[in-house]
Image 1 (cartoon, rainbow, N blue to C red):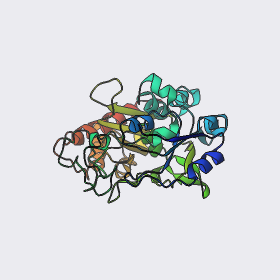
Image 2 (image 1 turned 180 degrees about the vertical axis):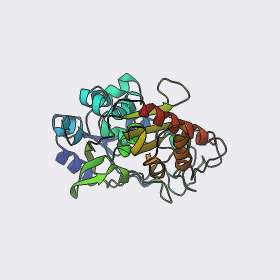
Image 3 (image 1 turned 180 degrees about the horizontal axis):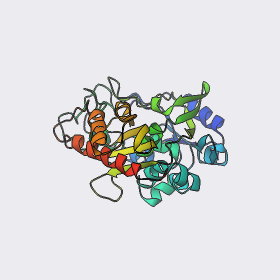
Image 4 (image 1 turned 90 degrees about the vertical axis):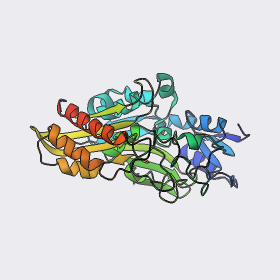
Length: 340
């Protein structure tokens, strides 16, 4: 691990100020010279293997004493402070009762020890687990722009079939994000330019020609909260995660679904996919294919076909296409059987 400066901040304003204080940055790696750290369950690992090389860490754990560390529930929705820990959110009674898909994405994400430490804001910004990104001896456009994507012709079993480009096929690894994009969450931030709110769907950027630009956040901009609106679909929601082993593995394919039903007929469906895309993936065309129709295995499979219509598999990950389709079907039918 390389040497770095360390500073603690006890408010979002001081954290942003500390992160923005003039450091030149490391031109060898495209990243901000300063990084925020809370649980550190992702950042510290990447620093140890020399993938991330911040010159300065701004410890924001003291900010947990502000609204950034609390969960607030109302009839209109729920607000998670960005420093709420994953375990704290998954065990909250209102989350389990009113937003079960959120509780499930958190519980299925990692070990209890990690969930006790990891913050919700940090979870959203975790980096890919692509082996070529994490091994500095291989070319990687996310790590060093223009160096190439080793996964394209390499071992790409874990990689994305949706949202990829000629420059990157790395999969977004998180689970929590799938629930948020399905439920139309918003993100609150604070940065040198002030406070802003943006749709969660606009937070992550597909790789395109700039895979090193992963989010819409600006330098020294800090996520302070995540808000999720209430809706008739939030109680009838679930997360289905398919992986190589049942215990603490990343998704090969996953689906976060939420349903508003009138009898057997779909008023509205929300479908988000994980394990198969470069960013948190909302399957809006599949949702539209279900609107107004009875939900059964036939209509669920038709929606799944629409969801994967644009898939672009590589040599080793083609199995993800039929797997994702079956995951969608099972998730939808399981959600139909839930009590609203």
